[in-house]
Image (cartoon, rainbow, N blue to C red):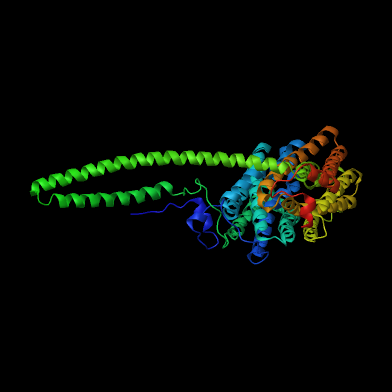
Length: 536
């Protein structure tokens, strides 16, 4: 009785209601059709919006929980800040792994699995006995789930949109900002009603809605164009052993029967007892010989297959590092990874620590018309949408737009130590929130710099450095406070980091620098200088 072994590649190819031929059932060889810039893509935008809303709402509004953890566990500001920084940084640090997961399994299964991670991590955090438990449950588990969801939503949105990619990315990225705005007030209200533990349990239950959103992330799959030619290694299917073993068994049985039939004809004239003994002997000998040959062939073929598989994996590993080196030969990309690292070291702490900044400045809580974190959240949403729309205009150079947001963010950070009232802190929170909306155009800048073919690879590298900055920024600011007992020095340091990154990126993007680079070396295929890409 025959049976079929279904691999993960086969399952992913059945997503979206279509089953591909065997030679197309591999994510590595999938030929994506032209982005539709609409249609089901708008459904992708909606579910990606709510996915980021649900997964990033609590981690981005962790400043409300941060104050509670300071009171409950009694640890220092720098030590406690690690919880929120890990939650927002660990997913980005693991971006290369997240990219591999999305490329291998697809956005839909990754999103569903990550939904369980986020919900489970939040619920586990409600039972935390100490700050170290929160490092694991809230920092690593929730943070890694958010990183997987972010990579999945950005990647699948870029597949569905080309001309309107800036708008689409701006829309989905506002989900996290709206989540920050709502969850800041929601978590504060839940803490007042049910306590810190009840708040985390309820927020974790809400995160289970990510599963419904992930189930709608239908992949954009193969078009009518023929697949690329396959190499010798690629010709080996996933069902190699089972299928060929079954096939050979049938052929051998047929040959045995045919041979037995011929032998039977030859001995028909013999006496019955001799005929039976000769037939039985011939059949047994034929079966034994064929079993030995089958076993030897199977061993040889399995050995060859393992060798081919090892060579293929090693070649993929070499190709990965070769492509990485090619990316860093692009001066704009090299400057971009330095800028994103410095930006997250300096620009992320306000969203985590602004509430504590206000409390340290002895601002009366009666003056609070709205939580500062909520102001950052709603203005970040406005900034993401506005900057995303601007990125779609042909006359806008998105790299220079991104550099402008970096320089203005640095200036705003320098102004925080001079804010001594709720009004000034609220204004600076709004400005910083709007400028932090440059996250919506960062994938757009990356795509135009390295090309859509290398987006996942390049974006994973850049997000790794962004996660490093997110993880280090708040603890550094907290340590500055523990050392000096005030936030002024910390925000001077933060502003300097962001300004330095902005100036380095501006230098790399100047036309004169690009001209010198083009004369000295020719860029590799599928890698573009930003001057050319931005005008395309």
